[in-house]
Length: 219
Image: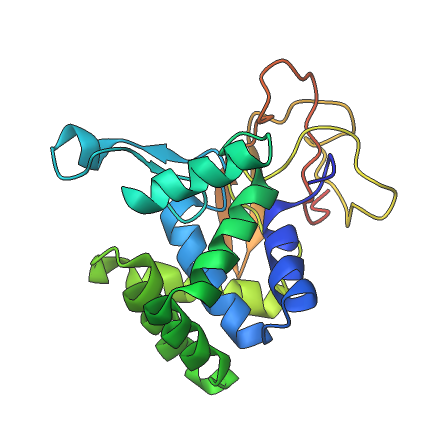
């Protein structure tokens, strides 16, 4: 991912532009990704491992576990990259979704869904692909999918989803007064869907001295 790019926007563009998925299918996948990892490629959760219910940690944007974890790590190694590389994770997601018959059935289903069926598509993808078994998270998944669809992947705010560095000239749609170019943003209050939320945004690389998130202009 180029420095300064929004991870949610990259996921949206990858699935819609490069893989030809519909906006509804893409939003359904992204709503689930948000619930799993808040779009953070570095997401790491070893709770299942510690509880003895898994043999490794859940990692990445889709929180891949057990054999799926191993397959992501193997793909990254094959490409000379680390498992937390977003492009590797997107390729892994697509390999699973288009190659495994059960996952492919879920992909085919959500690809046929209309905008009016977005909620159904979100739940179908959770059951077919994510398989978290966490029905209590469905409202969060659905809300995030609606946001992704409404924004077409752009300007979505979540902790840990921005790559540090200098964004290309068209990489910004505005900044808050706290998010001046060349600074680390420790926290910022933003407007999202009619309410105010506090988000913590830091560079993914602690050695970097700046982070360039894409925020609506609230000054």
